Picture 1 (cartoon, helix red, strand yellow):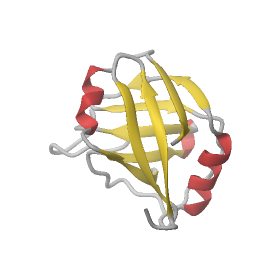
Picture 2 (cartoon, rainbow, N blue to C red; picture 1 turned 120 degrees about the horizontal axis):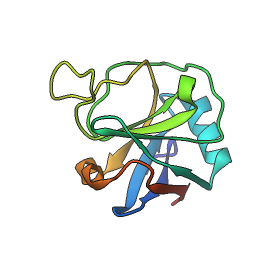
Picture 3 (cartoon, rainbow, N blue to C red; picture 1 turned 45 degrees about the vertical axis):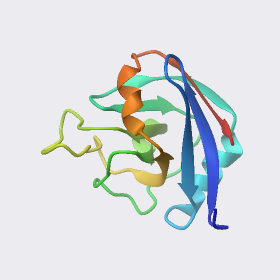
Length: 130
């Protein structure tokens, strides 16, 4: 792992642990704020093939984008939420995910993000340093 990367673990009820590789180079302030807030426990919201959950982080837009890929992990400033994309969302125009509004991409799921299709609304999620 390069010095501009770190790993966190996201444990989701009914699914298990996902390893997230964070990337400081793209959105360093957002990544630092997320790491400083850990550990975090929250409840999952489903939006198509995206889960998102509130975290105690308040960061404004930082290099935001509406172009995300399967496996991307992002912070959504309006909802103060961490989002994990694993397929199309209700506003997708093709088979790629599309966030509700621009997000700060902070990392990527290592491995298969589509395991999150098993997650139910309201499931418990815990995020901690790996």
